Length: 122
Image 1 (cartoon, helix red, strand yellow):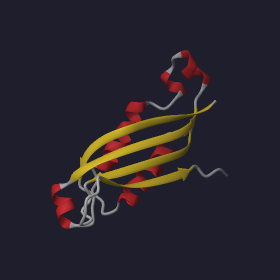
Image 2 (cartoon, rainbow, N blue to C red):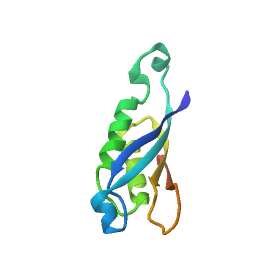
Image 3 (cartoon, rainbow, N blue to C red):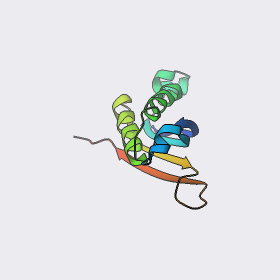
Image 4 (cartoon, rainbow, N blue to C red):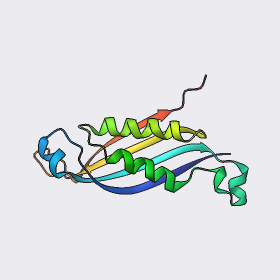
């Protein structure tokens, strides 16, 4: 059975941004990740091996958020690629990364980037 596993509203203090002050002082970020996956029958019998473990998914996102990058597009793409490599049952992943109070010269609660990746089938 196909289903989706989602982690929403993950919060991190990270050092992503084009400007030097963003990379030295950091900022607050929010990440949402949605993984379309094949959920095995064993998951419906309470067996964690039949699905994607939320804790493992969180650890992957956290690790990538700790690596400074200039662009959120880069971070989102890397997270999506690693999800597909790490979870063989995952067929599609959507990663949304939001930066709070981006330095755009005006009032903006958050700026967001959404990246979608599909597993390539041979």
